Each structure stands twice: as structure tokens, then as C-alpha cells.
Length: 247
Image 1: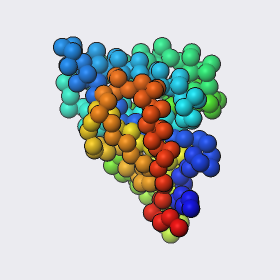
Image 2: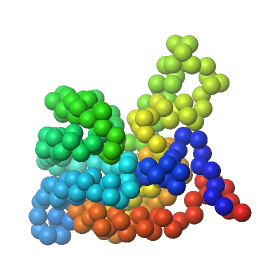
Image 3: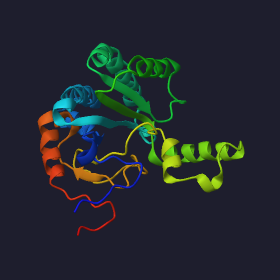
């Protein structure tokens, strides 16, 4: 027997709108294993993003959320951080036309305030430029942390209560979800982490409460659409109980 999913989430068996979130790990190691600078791995990883986004309709993925830069990643070298920020901008500029014509809607989640104003403006532009698309929803987490997101959402809810726009007794899971960065998105059905690490690393802590997890040893630059298909084939065989039991 199939259990009902908690309110606020999505069930691909009912909606056919699979939401897959990916912790893209292993770019630096992939490059270092070949004696190359870490940024080479990040550039290769960006190519995989493009391939996976293009393959989403064939894979049955309507929502793809990618963890690109965490709130903790600022501790990396200045060279790597600046290189990543530059890579984000180049990816958007290079892929903007393709996303617009192929029905990809792009969103950026996370705290943008510490980012370069030009990069923030580019994020605003690509979100507005693709806002009418609905075939694939690509969400990229940049300067994102799950705890930070929940803190900011709680502050937003508190301000609404203080302003008299919301009664404290009316704060439900759904209300909290709407105040998160992902408020316009369904909860993820599947979270994939590459590179063999088995941590959630502060990613979608609220949203992934009932998600299935897959931890794969494949480094992100080697994670092809065929790899994703294999992961999804395994996911399809799982019984999702959402805290209940099968009868």
C-alpha cells in the first residue's frame, strides 16, 4: 500500500513531476587526481550540469536543484572562490539563450547579499528572463546553507507576526515552507550526493525531511545522464513510507 506524502511535498507517482536535488561533490578531487588545478574540475562539472539539464525531460525530472556553493565554501582559497564565482557568471551567460528556448526556468537560492553586485544583477536577470518557462525548473544553490535558510525564514515569519499580518497560532509547516528560498518549489523526492561522501552537508534540511537519499562514489565530473538514469532506476524500486508503515 502506498502511503500519502505529508502536505507540502510532491509525489512523482502522483504528479509525474520528479524533483531531484544533487550535492555536486568531487570536482576538485577529479582534477587533482589528474594533476590539474581544482578549477579545471569545476569547469568539467559545469559541463555535466549542462548535459544533465538537457537530459531532464527524457529522465522524467521536472525539478533539478543543484548545490553549487555552500555558506561554508568561503573558507576555500581566494583563487578557488573567485574562480567559482566567475564560472557561475559564465555559465549563465553561455546557457541563457538555450534555457530560454528550451523551456528551462532558472532560480538561484541562498543569501546573495555577500556576492558581487554584478553577479547579483545577473542572477536577477536570468530569473526574470526565464520566468515564463515551465518544462524544467533548474535551481542552483549559491552561498546556501540549510540552517541559514531556516533562520532567515523564521525571521521573515517573525516580522509578519510583529506586523499583524500573521497569527502565531497559524504558523504551520506550509507557512514555514512558503518562507523558505524554495517556497515556489515542491519538496525533493530524491537527494543524490556524489564522490562517496555520506553527509547531507547542510543542504535542504527542511525540504528533504521525507526525501530518499543516494550516495554514489562517482565524482561529479564523471556523473553523466546515464549515471543519473541508473540512480533513478534504483529509486523507482524503493517503497516510500513517509513515516508510516505498509499494510
